[in-house]
Amino acid sequence: MFVRPKTTIDGKKRRYLVESYRDKTTRKPRQRHIAYVDLWPKKDIARLIRMVKKCRDALVNSERPENTKAYKRVALDKAVTLDKAIKKFKRDMRVKLVPSRNKVDRRRLDADTGIRHLQNARIPVNPFCESISLLMRAASNIRELENKAKMIAWPDDKLDSFIAFSKFIHDKHEEALRLLNAKTMK
Image (cartoon, rainbow, N blue to C red):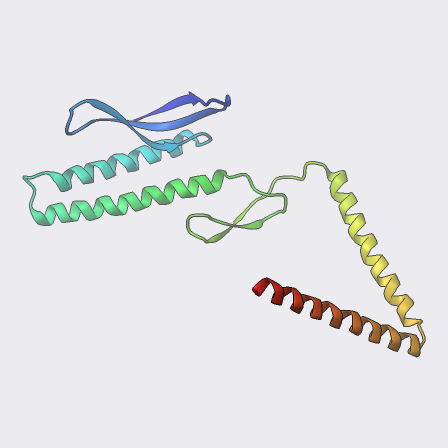
């Protein structure tokens, strides 16, 4: 097995792990793609190579005609467990190297398993933009509080008329929604 570099059509450089083997029927040399290893450290690539070699050896032992059925079954079970371990290792490496979003320690959902996991986030691009958004949010909260404070100073008859008017508008809105739903159902 070896790592092959490749430049894609759009100019990105990719690295992937390739295994050489002979086709059983034609006896011609072939190559099999194992995994993309773009940002993987060398020790993790070596670990994946060891795992794949162990899995291939177990598969070969399960196919040898001179072995007993029990030995073949045990070798096949070992190959299946190693294959599951390889898939989990690839998934873990992919999750570990995925760039995270803009919040610190956001919980992300893994597409394969559906399990949530913590992942550190990147630093915001521009702290000035972050502070502006915080100021805007604070200003809107202050405006809401000012409006509530103005309503407290209203007289009782004005509050009653406002409540009745808002109920009337809410009822008309619900009636319009019911009519719209009835028209779409026809």
